[in-house]
Image (tube, rainbow, N blue to C red):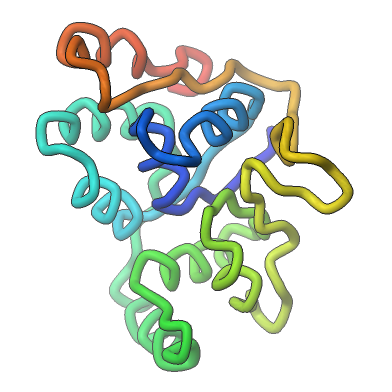
Length: 180
């Protein structure tokens, strides 16, 4: 089953129908059949950027849908060194944690809206294999996702825009039973 690191931007765009990247991220995630992996700093950023009433449902969805990786205390010095190395960009904690995670689990593909920075970051001397912006891929127009896979179920759409969100977000963010 394919694995893909996921950054803050696509998760926020997926949750907010008003976001300029919402439709493209939603289409990408609907066609992606694999595992999303991320870290606590990414989830923390997402929770900071979305409305408070969405946070509990988002966290319940993430708990059963996303591979959430802990950062051990031993990783802190390595993460700090990365932030120092890329201070000109600058690199934040969430990005540094994803670079650290990519090296640890051997995943070099990332779904991000921050192609500029992730195009510069290196994993043990190598670039990320693919910085997937859901709407941009070399040699393709903007009509479809950059990648498609064929195992497991698609991700469910969620939104913060609807006034009926309290009634329907739980149904939209139901965990994928194949991923529990």
